Image (cartoon, rainbow, N blue to C red; front, side):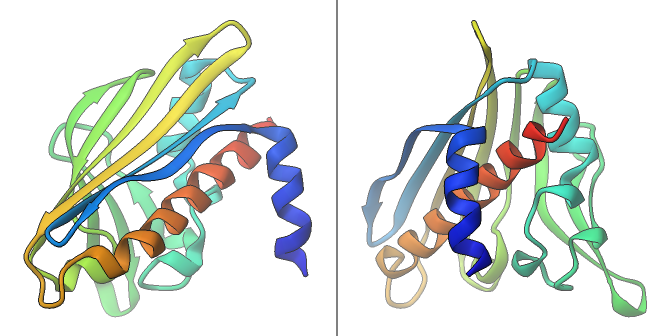
Length: 173
């Protein structure tokens, strides 16, 4: 029930511009989500990076607790997670960093880590007249048994959920 209440609220706080699986094939797929946010680009960037534990859904983590998520903001740094018994997991590695504008990552999220695939995630922030346009694009390529067509829509839903949660978090500032 709570999920049904949050969806309209997110739509009011951060208006979606585009959300879709832009391509899907046996050996790859691309998902893209965009929202407009009434927040300046550096506020968006700071929230995306320094407060990932406040907007990324802990249900989409290995530990099940968003408090264990963090980012090391530097080239070669990571979107990582602390696990029990001093464990760690790297979700994505930063390969390009333009503060307030764009972050590019390499990596395979969630169950994709167990597959022979490579992923490129791009978080982009563009200045608009009313704040910022934020986009998350995730491109996954590889050769897992059974192909990648069956998982594209699930990955699309997870990425879209995270961007919606970022918009909701920014609306509280």
